[in-house]
Amino acid sequence: MFVLMLGIKMAGHKSAFITLVATLLVAVFAAPALGFAPEGYTQFGVFWAFIEGLLKATFPILIIILMAIYSYNTLLESGEIEVIKKQFTSLTNDRGIIVLLLVWGFGGLLEGMAGFGTAVAIPAAILIGLGFKPGFSALVSLIANSVPTGFGAVGVPVITLANEVAPSGAATPDAICDIASKVVIQLSPLMLIIPFIILTLTDSSPKKIVKHILLSLWIGGISLVVQYLCARYLGAETPAILGSVAAILAIILYARLFGEKDTEDVAPKETFTMAQTLRAWSVYGFILFFIIFSGPLVKPVNEFLRTHLVSSVHLPIYAEGKAFKFGWISNAGLMLFLGTFLGGLVQGVSAQKLIVVLARTVKNLGKTVITIMSLVSIASVMNYAGMILVIAEALANATGAYYPLFVPLIGAIGTFVTGSDTSSNILFGKLQANVAAKLNYADPNWLVGANTAGATGGKIISPQSIAIATASCNMPGRDGEILRSALPYAIGYVVLAGLMVYFAA
Image (cartoon, rainbow, N blue to C red; front, top):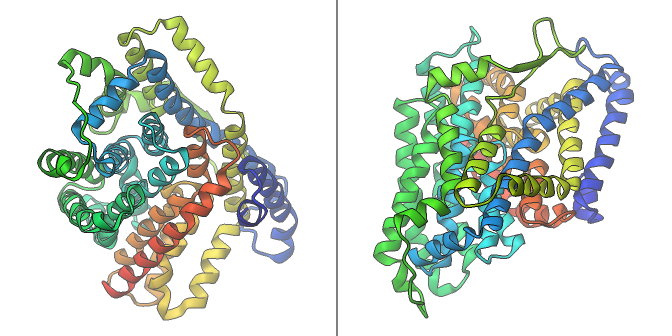
């Protein structure tokens, strides 16, 4: 995939499909021949792993991507995107503050509540609506959607990780808090650096460096303190959500106090009534309401949704009792659709027109469908054939006592391949715990948490995330271009995380 996308500069959907074919060939022929296929492997089972990938790609990833773009297209149809643009520019003319508010604040909030690409798709689309270039919008959205993913979707990655390494299979609240707080500590330098990178990418003027540093320390520091307190005392569910809310308030406060002083040619600001504001933000307001109301924070509703209208498919490669499940009324895609549809009606778009907008959105996602289905199928096949575990174990055996330096790299590989921090934790959580035991590591949870710290960096260049960004920014086939621009930041991210894990233990 790297050769095709970076070397030959082949379009993303073509690169992904060819890589899928190569993965299938390796899984069918090399896995049994070289002896790395796990127990229970069969060559025909590779086919069912491929089917599993198609199911996972569709339910819910593609549905969420579709609905996230649909929400933006609805704003374009109603014309309310113009009000949102004016409100952002009325807050401040400082483009850096606007970008930071969208990708770090609002994007982090979306990641904390929904995950699954919403934090890339929606902020990137709004940035384009505000006049930013597509490539820039995609890049800053990907970079910002790194740190929050460890606690995305109401803490699912860290909670899953804690359960994976718990002796009983179900982690205690204290164990979850311990791992969650360690993840925040490991990511602490990056919480200060990522905002600075976003600001510098927005405005690289040497005159703004000091301002960028101060603003990054302010915003990153607020995020860090709130996330640590949440992780240490509340658990994994709230760090990304409350940390992002605190960051949004901190950014707005900074903009009110200092933002306009750093701008030139300040235009007269148009004011809007409360009714106009609620109308313009109704799509995203409804989306946030449905996501919060259906999530774990409202347990009775969440429990009902998770246990009703759930499709269950038992594939032949699954152990007895395991099945692929999809909740038709509990997934984030439905919440995005409901929020968008109701918000569109409030904004004056007819129900018939909203259906037309949805159909048009589906039609324009052809290449993205190929890309996402290929990538998720690659992850399923590699996992089934034992390929991902071979990579991780080889790295562990080669590094010895320096293994802690490379734990984040393993986590990043897991996210790069699967597109999911949670999947990376499922793949490598137990591996990290086992290696920690072999090394007689004083605090095994430190290495366990480092898997998630690295996984958040892999999210920046995950082909699935890049496919979401290209779809949101209307850049079909330009996945390789975005990957090339994002790769240096991902490498630096993982290296810094590795140094933090090794020296701060």
